[in-house]
Image 1 (cartoon, rainbow, N blue to C red):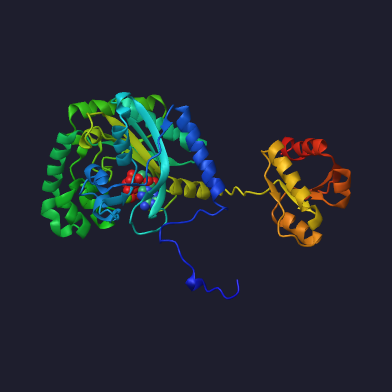
Image 2 (tube, rainbow, N blue to C red):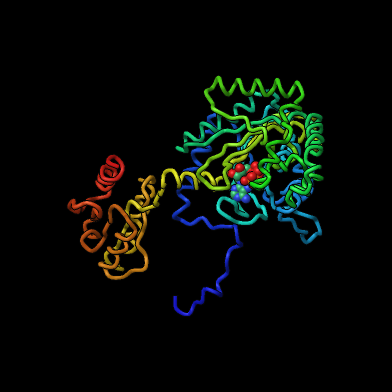
Length: 431
Ligand code: ATP
Ligand code: MG
């Protein structure tokens, strides 16, 4: 492009990416597999706004969490209301089921898909606008509901041909056992304040559980000596966890118990889990979730137990790329060409005829004129499998010419009925 300086072109926000035509077929394929599995388990879709009152997230996620403290895109709108681009879906989903009285009929098995926004440092597997599929089950108390989420997601990895993902599980207990455990952690870490890094020191006051989440290798030994949550679990949570484990085993799901798995959001209790991979570097979790029995009440509803999880689509797509090198090019089947400008109208009509009668084919119409040779070159460059040519002879005979572009087969001139049969034979039956 002459005279255009790249420096003057508008750019997207860092960490907020475009999905280009080369990538979108893979996105569609992944989304399609996920939706099929969700429907197979009887889960229903809910669509939620991307903007919410900021209080929706403050009340639910917790003031001391990374998300609320430093990752939210919040701003005042023209009315002075504080709004936030959703950093995750669970809080919005709870808001929506309460507002629309969906919990009068439980259990509710719901899913949603779409972009989430967090002001994090962009890097591989960590974006500022990323996409999640979220799954939430309301009004289900039993450990089998937690296990069903695991079975569903496990089936999903099969459907997506994803391999080598590990399941880590843990139980956070009830509020009281968590409070006791938090006190024990503070007791344990306090004498070692000098050894803690800055974020961990801050967490000692605000959210001690999250110290266990630290990725700092220098803290590894100290953390591994910390008291274990499992020693502080209440009886009900223990029984719940045992039953959860039994259900997984009975369904041949392999898992490891990770006593350090605490999750970053405040609202979890009892079961928590993560699916992780070793093939994506530091951003290893592709799906994470757990039980949040008190969130509905926290957000103003009647108490209703709930469980759910969310998966990161960018990481899933990246993992498929690493494991399968998937490229799903979107090439046309048919490229329709008028041999010169006089037959443009006939060409449009032929293309529309194919779109009406053979909608499973991708039919592209040549535009922008040019010499016949140039038109044929475009058809070839587009990767089309056949060209349909319409010129003087075809116009007079009310026929079209089919020219195979990827084989040495002869071109054929035929009428519109034969056209359908021949294309079906060439492009559908034999592909
Ligand atoms: P992480 O420990 O990677 O920061 P998280 O605990 O903040 O994850 P959740 O809020 O549980 O993540 O979100 C569920 C899933 O969404 C994650 O497992 C991950 O696959 C994906 N995800 C979370 N944050 C991002 C991000 N900034 N960019 C891309 N994917 C993300
Ligand atoms: Mg995070």
